[in-house]
Structures are given as structure tokens and as C-alpha cells.
Length: 375
Length: 185
Image (cartoon, rainbow over all chains, first blue to last red; front, side, top):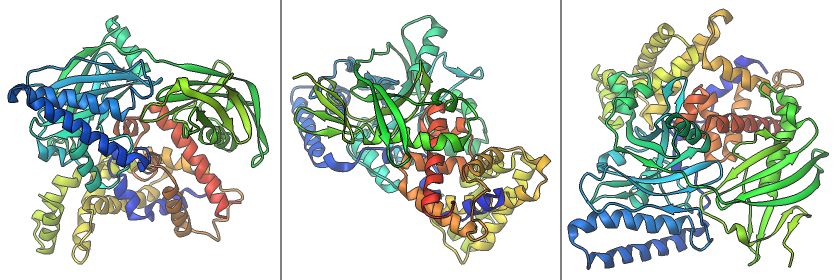
């Protein structure tokens, strides 16, 4: 199609799509809201426990201890760590001092492709939080992680409940204030997704297992007002909430061998081989193989040739079901990345709250049984 | 100053309106224009034309949100200028973005004579409604705002490779969708 026609069509797209994507709404990237009610109950229990602690602690100590410890408790419940027997989740000791907390490491877990790092930052004024996500964001970097020789900053999102779905500025603001912000201590809980690749680069730069994380406020408006075009230059010049060293956690993984099962897709009349599944509590890698897959996963590939295969790759991730001992089923959702490595296309899928990887009884794709536990 | 206050200044025909508008949304407008035009001189002229366009549009309009309203004006002006420029002068993120989309919506076998930009826009809008928010964000930032993959990666917190792969899949889905809708055969 002519470039002019496409260009003109883009100009005519509906207003809501433009305003929805003016800045990134992390709150809109959440799972469906089927568990809102139970999660609210859990939050009430958590708050009740925190309130009980108030009776035994001095007010000054409580202000800091409760906000960090209560967040740790909420995170553990939200991520379903205990009920799904996640052993790779690591909680850190939190400071008891209430003043100048700056950056506090709460917990980390390896989701297979990245470390999910949960931190509290303070002080963050309420009016700053209210400007999120329109004109304020939060950014992190690892010391030694560079692109083209420059520090590389990535955005961190306020940690909202995994089970809710919010969209639109007002809903997001409400959710952030409700789930991630503690006004009396001006503390905001953030989640940083730090890729294993970035961690490896930072570890190599320091020849150390530990990495140095820095988190800062990214005020887009202040940057624009200052006329600084380079975000890296701007962020490097800002005072951060602080920096801290941490050692990345190992991933726990279970491998399911499908014995090179073949799946025939009637819609496209194509056949794809399912090699196996690497499953962690927060992610899955579907290993598939088909004729010509290596060539189709090289840069600059012909989109006409790859298009139908990419849809079929996606279909595997979307339609396969993990069946647990209580009969419940789980879909890993669409793949986020699909590199070709060691003879297979490795489709990585991720999700918010943990699943019990030890409890998987069967793996199905349509009528095809890919794997079944020996009972 | 809030958007509503800036719009009030436009209604009062106060020149401070443009000053405040530029202060608040100038960065976003410049970015859209620069991504499409790829050079500072054209961008500056386009941004100035955007303020003039906004001055002429408000009143009677009272847009909400103001940022996407001015970004749309900037984009329309920038794409007009972009298509008027000779091919030799084009060297922007928008070139790459349009090339990517043109490859996904091929010329051959298309029925674009019967279905013009308006129909295509309606189809793409409907298609965007079928996407998860993150995918919609990636599509719009790449093809409407013409941001680079590196910038989208930084904005979304997704890795560069993730952004690239997801965009490839979104384009495949778009092509499939347009075929189903009868815009491609």
C-alpha cells in the first residue's frame, strides 16, 4: 500500500488511541480483575496486622518499620509466594530508621528472563505521585550497564495489585495512591524489571556477583522546561533516591519434555513440533521447531514468509493449558520474546503472580496431550 | 498551569496562552515533529505552525486532553511537510516506521483504490481495540508517534528485543486482521 495512504490513515486514527498512549500506563498492563475481591480481603488483613503492630512499637519506629514490612507482606501475598511454594523469592531486612530512608530493597525474585526487584523510595510528595504517569515517571539503572558507552536508564512502575486492571489517568492515579503509596511516610513502592542480560553486563563490569542499583525520579516536565533533550544526560544529573548493592537470585525451573510432539494447525495447514517447556513460577519458555525456523528468525526476514508462522507460534502460547491437581487450568499468554537458540524457537511468556510449578498434572494443546504426570 | 487554565487563556486571546502551551507541551510536540521530520530546522517551523494552528482552533474548540490535541496538529503538519520533502531529504524514524508498515500492508493484491485512508484508519482503530494495552502502546508509539525502538524500550520498561519481537507479531496480526476485514485480499 502507498506510504502516503498509510501515513494519512495514521493521521485519522481515533483520538482515544493517541491519548491512551501519550505515556506508558503500567497499571493497564495487569492481569484481568477476577481476583479483586479476595485480594481486597487480603489487603484488609495485612492492614489489620500492621495496625496491631502499632500497639507494640513506638510511633517513630513504626512509621518506617510498618511501611516496609507491611509492603513485604503484601508483596508476598500478591505474588502468591507461600501458597505456591516459591523457593527463589528473597526478602531483605528492612531498616528501622524512619528518616531519610531513600531507597529500600524489599525483595527480589527471578522470573526466568529478569529479576523483579521491589523497592520502596522516599520521600515522594503526594503531588508528584499524582502527576504519574502523565508527566512523572521513575527510572532505574545498574552501574556498569551501558548502551553505546552511555548509562542506560529504564523505567520502574509503581507496584499495583497483580490482579487488577486499570486504564486511564484517573484510575491509574487512584490505584497508585491506594496500592503503592503510603502518605504519612511519603513512601512509594516500585517494581524494577531488570533483565538477566543487563545483570550479566553489570556483573562483568564490576567482576562481582553483586550489582549496584540506582533509582531516581524522572520528571518529564522539569526536563522539558530545562530544555534537556537527552534523557540519559538529564537523569544522570538528578539526585537519586539512592543506590544499593544486591545479589541476583537464581531461578527455579521445571522442564517438561514433550517428546517432539507434532501439532497440526488446521487453520493454516501447518505443522509445528513442540519440543518442551521450561516452567518457572512466573514464566514459561515454549520450545518449538518447524521447517525453516532458523532462517525466519534472522534480522530483516521477509514478513510475508514469517507472518503465518509467527501467528502459529503465538497460538501455541495462547492456547496451551497447564492443568493443576485441583482441576484448575492456566494459560501462559502470548510470548514476549521468541529468540531462536540451540535449534528451537524459545518463546518466553511471563505473568504477574506465581503458579505452583510442582503441581502441574497435565499440559494440553487442544486435544493433544503434551505431557501428563505419572500417577 | 493546568490545561483548563491554558485553554481559558486561548479563549481570552491572550498571547501568554502559547507561551504556557509551549512550556507545558512543547517537549511532546517537538518530539512528534522531530521523529517524523528528522531535522531541527523543519521541526522548529512545524512546532511554530502547531502553535498557530492551535491558536486558530481554540476557540471554538475546548480539547481534552490538550496534549494529544496539539500532538495531532503537529503530526498532521509534520507529515504534510514530510511528504512534500524530496525522498533525498527524508531521514527520520518515520521513514523506518512507514517502511515497516508498508511491508506489512503490501501494495500488490490490495484494494486500496476502493478503500482509502479513511477506511484503513477505521480498520486500524478497530484493530487497536483488539490488542492488549502494552501492544497498543508499542504500535502507537512506533507508528503514530514514530519513536525509535530504543525510546519505546525505555518508556515501557520492556527490553529492546521484546519491543522488536512484539512489534513484528503485532504487524502480522494487523495483516491478518485487514485480510479478515476484506481490506487486503
